[in-house]
Image (cartoon, rainbow, N blue to C red; front, side, top):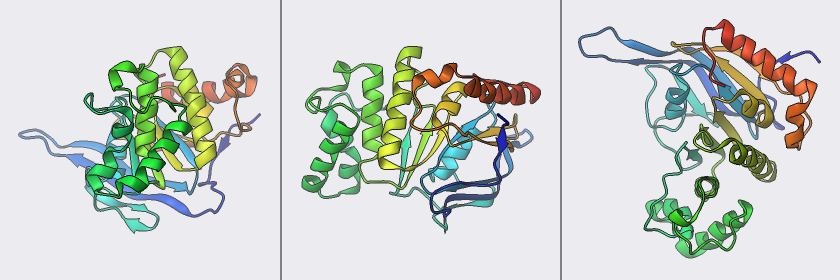
Length: 271
């Protein structure tokens, strides 16, 4: 099997969910030379596509996600969501971080409902949506529990449900399973694949784990050390749904080996 280098997104409709053009991010440093975090980055994601982003620590992966989340502005270039220039946070963009960030005094149901409270949406309508999402992430029956009563993996599933409560078209995930043990992380990978196949959201996943990227993604984007830029765009041609056993296959090993080789050649590897 040859490793295919993608020429662009491969969504069902071909429409761009994310279009990044000439994105550059420079941080000002008092009394020192400015820090260039991202250097002329171009990325296209199609509607419904699952794309993973890997690269060395400090290469600008999280900076890119913060820009797409509307938390930070780019220094130059532009980011478009569904053809609209991004100028700040959008209600149709969900974010899942490494830590689930659940409020300990709120029940699981109320944690999922948090965006509804913040956005002042109809609570009666969204309560049924929240219950449906808890069923989707296999936490039915835990609505009245509190975060302290759930394992780390279960808490992260609550965070995923919360990110889907207002039906975002785009889901940004920044190392969502990085704090979990290896076995729980594998279970969460299988769970995320199942949820994605049911909902078909556009997903951009930042991960330090190359096997995780290959298992989950339609495409894997590889970033260089800082200043970050995309050096490879690899299409993962593995049939879905992907069982965990696929990680022992020769095809899977070729993708992982190729990506590790790229990151070693660029002077950094994270997983």
